[in-house]
Length: 303
Length: 303
Image 1 (tube, rainbow over the protein chains, first blue to last red):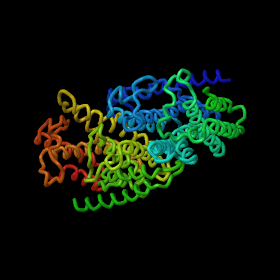
Image 2: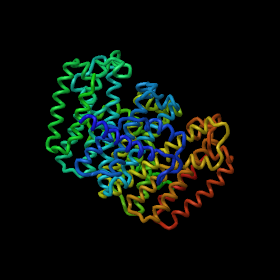
Image 3: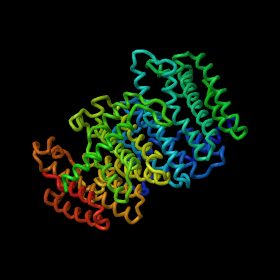
Image 4: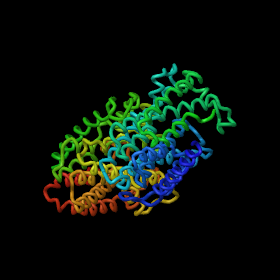
C-alpha cells in the first residue's frame, strides 16, 4: 500500500508543479500590468523547489472522495501550496528563523536579497488568492469565495501567521509552554493549512456539512501527527538516516510535545491520535483508502 | 465645494476606522483558533493610524454612483485599506525603505520588532482577503470572488508589489528610468490600488461593463495625479508648509516624473491628465460630483 501511496503522491506532485510553473510565469493575467522578471524569478525560486506537495495532495484526494477532480481542483490546490511556499520564504528571513538553506538550495533572501524575499513572499501570498478566486477553480463563485475565506482564516492571524508568532515568543519565553499551549501553537502554525487542505477538498467536492466537519477534524489531527513525527525524528534520528542536521532544536527553547512529554509520551499520544483520526474516516469506507495511507505516512516515517 | 469634500472624506474615514477597529479585534472569526494579542496589537498599530482612508473613500463613492451603499460596501473598503496598510508596514522595514517614523509614530518594526512587523504585514494582507470574501460584503458570492481576484491582481506581482520592486531597482540602477518606465512603475506601485478602489466600487455597485472601464480608467489617472502632486510637493515645498522633511528624494535616484520632466513639465502633464480624467467622469453627470472633487483634491494641493 505504501508504494502505491508514494507513487500517487509523486504523480500529484508533478501535476501540481506543472500548474504552479504556469501560474508563476512571466506573462500577466487580467488586471496585472507587468510582472517584473526579477520578482518572478524569486517567487519561482521559493515555490518551484520539488516539495512533496503534501497539502495539494490532501486537497485533491479529499475532493476525489466526492467525485470532484480535474484542473479546477488542481488549481485550488496550487493556491494552497502558494500560501505554504510564501510562509517558508518569510520564515527563512534573517529576522525570523534566519536560515541560509532550504532543501540544499540557498533560501530566497540568500539567492536574491532580503527586500526581494519579502516582496516575493508577499507576492506568493497575494497570488494565491488570485488563483483561488479564478473562475477556472469552480463555476460557482460562492464556492470560490468560501474557499478564499477559509484559506485566509487558516493562514492569517488566527491561523498559521499567528502560530508563527506564538512559536517565536515561545523560543524566548522564560518558561516552557504547557501542553495545551503547544497544541494550540502547532494546530495554528502547521496544522491550519493541513486542516484547510481537507476542508477545501470537501468544499470543492460539494460535501454535506457533516462530512466537511469529519474531514476538517481529520485534517487537524493529521497536521498534529505530521508535527509529532517530525519532532520525534528530530529528537531521535541520527544524521545519516535523516540527511540533515539533527537535534538542532535541542539548544533552543523549542515548544514541542516531544520535549514536554518525552519520546515515549509523544509516541503514546501519536498512537492515540492516529486511532482517533482513523475513526473520523470510517464513515467513508473504502473510498478513504488514500487518506488512510496518508495517515499511515504521517505516523510511520522511520526514526 | 472643497470644504464639503473634506467633511465627507472625514466622515467616511471615521466610518471606515470604526469597522477596521472591529475587524482587528482580539476575537476570532470562523475558522480561526486564537488571535495572539501581541500580533493583533502590531496589526492595529500599523492599520489604525488615522489615515485619510482615501482608497476606501473612492470605493465607497464610486459604489454610491450606482446606488450601492451600506455596511457591505464599507466592509469591502476596509479590505482594500488593510492591503494598503500591509504595504506600508512592509515598505517601512529595514530591508526596504528603512523608515523609523510614520505619521509621527514609530513604525511597526520600531514599536515592536522586525519579525512581528513582517508577520503583522502578512496578517493584514491575509485578513484583507478574509474580509473581502465575507458574505456580509455582498449576497452574491460571484461578486465577492471577482472583488478578491481584482484586489489580488492590483496588489500582487503584476501590481503594487511588482511596482515596489521596480522602485527599489530604480534606486540602484546605473541610469534614470525613462518616462514610460516611470509611468509603469507608478501605475503599479501607487496607482493599482487607487484604480482598484474605483473598479471595485463599480463591481459592487453592479455597474455595466462600459461604466466599469470608465471608472477604472479614472482611478488609474487619479492614482497618477496623486503621485505627481506628491512629487511636486516634495520638490518644491518648504518644510514649514509641508510639515515633514522635504527634498528627501533629492539625494536618491528616485524615479519620478518631476525629476525627469522638471516642475513645469510635470505641471503641464498633470493639467493634461486632469482634463482627461474629468472627461472620463462626464457620462455620469452630476452624480460624479464627489469623484470630481476628489480629482480636484488630488491635483490642487498647495505647494
